[in-house]
Image (tube, rainbow, N blue to C red; front, top):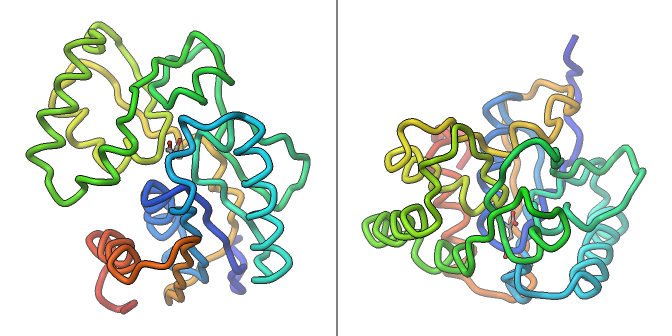
Length: 227
Ligand code: DGL
C-alpha cells in the first residue's frame, strides 16, 4: 500500500537533464514535494575528473540533506552516479549493468567501461539548444550515423539529457529498443501517493531565464494544477 505522507525529495543533476527523472516520478506518484537542484555552475560534469565530480556531488548531497532537510536524494545524473559510492538508503542513483549497451558522457564511459559509447559534448549541446528541436534532430542523427548506433538491438540512454530528447533517438532508430536508464534506477522505492505538487528550483549559478526554462520543461508534461 502506498504511503499518504509524501517525502521531501531532492533531485540533483548538472543541469536540465534531471527534469526527465522528475517527470517520471510525477507520472508514477501523482505529484509530491520536490527540490530540484541544477549544478549549472559546474555543468557539464562529463568532461570533468572523477575527483572533481565526487567532491562536488558529495557536498551538494550534504547541502540537500542538511540545509534543505530532504528525506530522499535522487541522483538524476548518470555521470555522478557512475562514480558515487554510497550505502545510504535515502540516496537513489542510476544503475549500470555490464550486459547492456549505453550511450553517455566521457566520464561515464571512463567509469563504467566499454559497454558505454561516448557521445562527446552532446549533453552540453542539448542543454544549449533544448528550444531548437530541429537543430537537435540534425545533430543527433549525425551522432547516430557516425557511431552506427542503428546496428544495436537495444540501447540505454545513460545520460538524463538524452532522455529529454528520446523521441529524436526513437525516430531515427525505429528498430532499436531505446530505454531511459532512469526506468531502472529504482524509483518504485518512492513508495507514496500525492496528487498535489510542491516544487522549488535551486541553481548553483543564479539565472532567472534558466530557472524559468526548468519550470517550463517540467510544465510541458505535467498538468496545469501545479503552477
Ligand atoms: N545529465 C547528466 C548525465 O546524466 C550529466 C551531463 C553532463 O553534465 O555532462 O550524465
